[in-house]
Picture 1 (cartoon, rainbow, N blue to C red):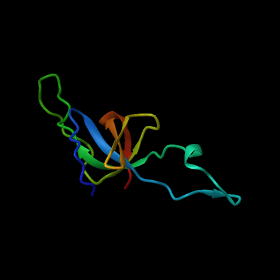
Picture 2 (cartoon, rainbow, N blue to C red; picture 1 turned 120 degrees about the vertical axis):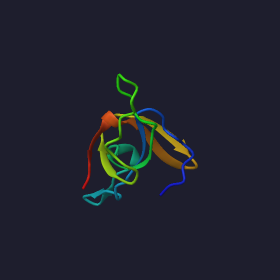
Picture 3 (cartoon, helix red, strand yellow; picture 1 turned 90 degrees about the horizontal axis):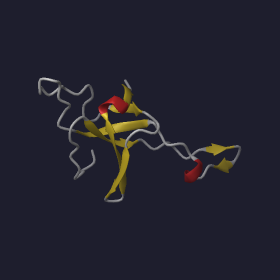
Length: 98
């Protein structure tokens, strides 16, 4: 588990992309700049929770440590201590990998 100094707020979730192995196609190594952004990520931290119209905090459907699929272009990338993370809203999480 990463020791991260970022605490998301609201319905935001901090995830870290699960890097794919280096791809080789036909003996050619695909450079990082040509690779697609991975959609598989691990939940690192949860925000304070989304509130309903009555002010009650709604529970998250994911938990820290879950492997999830996130939307390809969702979230905001953050770099801290040479590690890359993404802050996404819970609605940008497409599903939990079981």
